Amino acid sequence: MVVVRPRAGMTFGLDNLPYGSVIAPDRRRVAVVRFGDAALDLRHVDGTLFADGRLDAFLAAGPDAWGEVRGATAAVIESDTQLLLPLSDAEPVLGFAVADYVDFYASEQHAVTAGRILRPGTDPLPENWRHLPVGYHGRAGSVVVSGAPVRRPAGMLGPGSFGPTRRLDFEAEVAFVVGRPGTEIAVADADEHVFGVCLLNDWSARDIQRFEARPLGPFLGKSFATSVSPWITPLAALTDVRVAPQQDPAPVSHLQETDPPHGLRLALEVRINGAVISRPGFAGMYWTYAQMLAHLTSNGSAVRTGDVFASGTVSGPGAADAGCLLELTRDGAEPVVLDDGDRRTWLEDGDEVVISGAAGALTLGEVWGRIGQE
Image 1 (cartoon, rainbow, N blue to C red):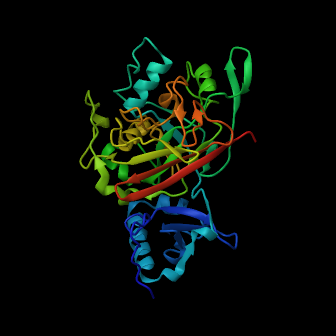
Image 2 (cartoon, rainbow, N blue to C red):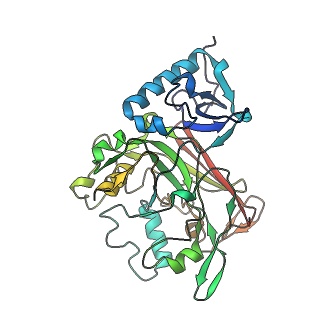
Image 3 (tube, rainbow, N blue to C red):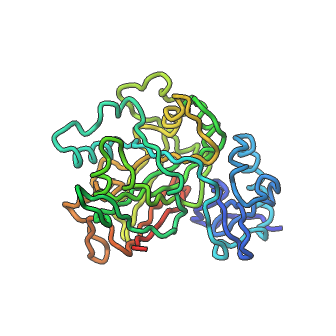
């Protein structure tokens, strides 16, 4: 028996313990918790909940089970590291079946800047924007695990013009994974249903999106790929980074925030081919995940285990805080310069985009993808 002492600077310690699934060396699928550069097979904690190597049954079990498993997992890791599987010998995969996917538009900075770019001369914010969390239903089948190849999509670029996108973009986002099902969920009850967070890249073909989006919103410009991190950090690990949103006017009664609040002080970083091009902050997001969930279910719509809903592009007030190339380059007018001197207005084939994140001293891992034609 060995008592674990996380090494200095360890980013996946006992205060984090994110969940996922991996393909083990013997090709079995295993549900795991990550600790440093290794993982614990969760069958050592509960052989029933994790028998199939997936997180679905655990997510559905609800907060009491989440807390019990988290405590038991930490105890097992502290008592015996010989049970840990090196992640260098495993392949991370999507840990649960995605039931539905909804993408919101919760950053005021992003909404204002994008509105000015796309609708010059008009109010950049729609009339409804400060009164409800704006969102759209995506396609669950578009959600892929980090590292899956991203094919350059084709679509309608304008009247009579069909072809591969010439304006391929990333969007740095935070996603929330639903555990316990429910409907008409109050803001105060959101943590009874939301299990945790992961990073998400909502790849976007801006030319396809621009031509198709009116009047019904994004469709083929976003449905070709949505990459998510394989590691889900439970909300239980994020109690120290909660912040209250700043909202004016005050939301209607069923969207009003509670104490403790549901804003999160997270820090993201975006790299293209290794060059840091942006560091968006999540603390300033206008709408919280609890308000998004309350709005999503307020009409009687139900959420299910494995539902994913995302924040929309995370952008801050500074020029280097934007979470997509649409903003960073002002719609292609001002290229970003990479470390090797290459310039980018939009993503090129072969480019690798990595979005990483942190919650105070905790890491949220990263989500990455490489652009290709096939």
